[in-house]
Amino acid sequence: MFISSILPISMLLFACLSTAVVVRRSIQSIPSTPIATGKPQTSSPPVARFLFRARVLVDANSEALRMCSEIPTSRFDWEALHKVLSTKFPDFPGTKGAAQDRDLTVLKSGNPDDASTITLDQWNDVARITIAPDGAPDSARRTAILQAMFQSPNPIWKVTSEETVTWRNSAYKSLGATLGFCADTQHLFDTSGLKP
Image 1 (cartoon, rainbow, N blue to C red):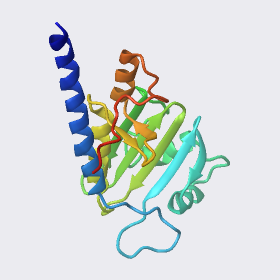
Image 2: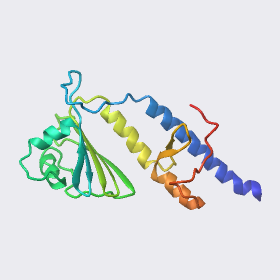
Image 3: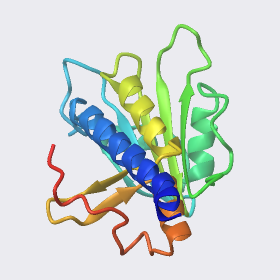
Image 4: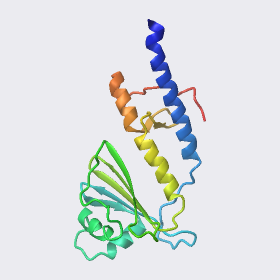
């Protein structure tokens, strides 16, 4: 009886740990894309990054601020961004909001000759928008991996060298709730012996 009840849990733990190892190796293989510094970039076009909280712009990099300065409005908020982006990206939402705990959406330009993308990452009342122009390096690959991590049915999480969980997907939170753990403060798995 004991063996038959522990077998499904063991299989689940093995699948979760295997997924975590694969995702970690995938993330480590992606070169990091630096945030635009305001200096002209010669190798690739600048990427604009916006951060909204409760539909109000709270942070932006230099390329995003340049875009804001070109828009004649007294207050740059979600509606102003929607007005500008919906012409090039018809699927850009008019209202901010995540359909789940965390929602990651990638939009492509409505023009088939334009490879620009928007990555819309939303959770609670926060939205992070990244606009990668045509020719931005590795944006499609990075976005695909992020989307796979967020939407994976397997628990995926990131820990620091001190074993503090810094990020987890909704499957990790759901498993923690099912097992009676508080996924925000308690570890679901002992990974102290695992090193990449």
